[in-house]
Image: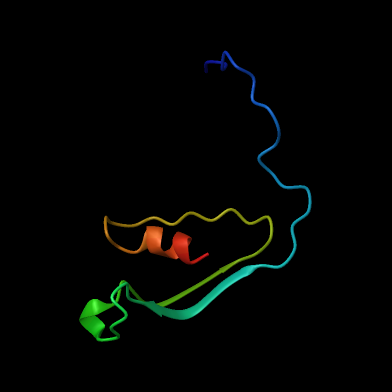
Length: 71
């Protein structure tokens, strides 16, 4: 393991976390059209609790960035 030449400053963990994030059956289309073939996200459900570490993984163009942008 190599040590960084520049020490990290600050903390990545916020001191106080409250609430949580919940997507329930989210459907999204950039074009505003609701037809099935235009949906970027279709019935996506996700819950993230305070302090929970969550990763969004998937193929290219599977909606990961769209989920993050909707936050």
